[in-house]
Amino acid sequence: MGICGGGWERHVAESETIINPVEEVERLVETGQAVALEMFVNALPPSDVAHTINHLSETVRTQLFEMLRPEVAADLLEHFADEHAAEIIEELATDKAADILDELDSDDQADILTELDDEDAEAILDEMEPDEAADARVLIQYPEGTVGSIMHREFIAFPPKRMIEEVVTNLRANQEEYGEYDVSAVYVVESTGELRGVVRLRDILLAPGSKPVSSIRIDEPAKLEADFTVQEAEDYFDRHSYASAAVVDKSNRLIGVVRREAVEEAFGEKAQKALASFGGIIGGEELRTMSMRSRVLRRLAFLVPNVFLLLISASVIAMFETTVEQVTALAAMLPVLGGLGGCAGNQSVAVSIRELSLGLVKPSDITWIVMKEAMLGFLMGLVLGVLLFAVTWAWRGNPYLGLVVGSVLPVSIFVATTMGGLVPLVLTRWKLDPAMASGPILSTSVDFVSFFMVLVLARMMIGYLA
Image 1 (spheres, helix red, strand yellow):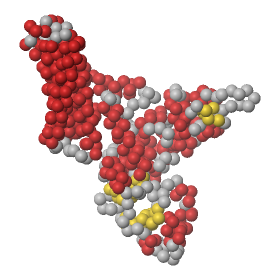
Image 2 (cartoon, helix red, strand yellow; image 1 turned 30 degrees about the horizontal axis):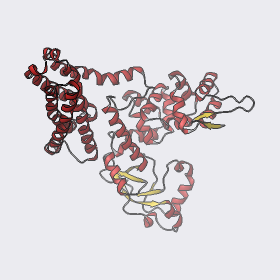
Image 3 (cartoon, one colour; image 1 turned 45 degrees about the horizontal axis):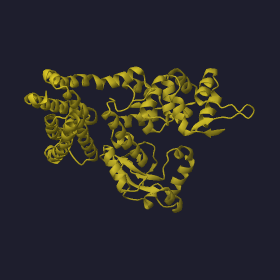
Image 4 (cartoon, helix red, strand yellow; image 1 turned 90 degrees about the horizontal axis):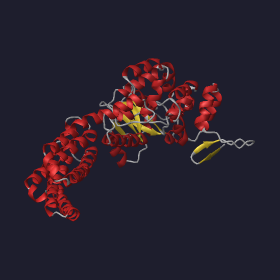
């Protein structure tokens, strides 16, 4: 076997043929060679797993996961984003989907289940192992973006009076199960579940076996509450070098563990979804392997409202149709004014969304935002207005045309930056997605103001422009 050019390639000595991974998977699925199929996908480099499966047809992909043993299929799912993994699970028979989810960590189970329809998720939960389903049900009750939604329920805990030698015996007896937990410490909890401390595994191995585990515990373990936000968890791990932290409820009962890497991944996914929303993808995530119906609906949900918003801007031009016909140069300058205003406004939108995510501003900080953005916008507008005046004069040879478009720009940029700073705060207060809705609202408003002002001035100075 060899890896070349980022792809998995098998060279057969006699013929020196190169096997395409996608074609090989299709052949093995079609011929029903389950054992050979497992060997092949296990041999794929991690970077090629998602690419290969992504390029299979939906039918072949479903047959692939149906043929694989649950533990092998679960390993493959870990290479995909939650939304994509849910799409794959949704294609499978309920019992097969449940068997695969049983092999995943509880946090991964919850991530996938929350992406499914409630009916499909409940059907799969009913087929899962009772203990696995119970853990998953606990996790999916927490809202997205909270520590509880990304924690995992696999942890090791003992009562304070348990002797260290008993702890060691328990760890050794369950080494196979505990080995999958990826932990370096055990927790000390009361019979009520209240967290009392944490003990590092190395301290357990080095301490006398006749002492209780509480004698070597750290009384102030790293911990977060389940309803803390991912942002708060990210800030916590930034201040501390812990690899993980206990997750507790309001009564300090231990309910899970959250890893630093899970927090960083969730924080990154939040940023990616915000970027996707800003680009007009409703739901914050789209992959080309998703069903055509899903992709069409996600995009149209953004584009259809924009039709009506853009018509508002176009109606201004229709009101001054005669003026535009007399001064055709205005038709070339209107997109420039709208574009500059939109770009300036989007800069302010990006800053506001970033500051909201960092907790630096709140929806109530409207006055403060206006003070910060208004003067900034007006000064930028003056500079750009003078520049546009000079360019228009040089291009069209008419200083009055340059004066019309140049004088509008300071007001246009002022409106754009001020609204760009405010709209995300207002939408957040109304519990709407600021990344998704800010752009269309801002563009429509800026275009309306810019077009109206320049066309009114043009009509007033038509004798100098026509």
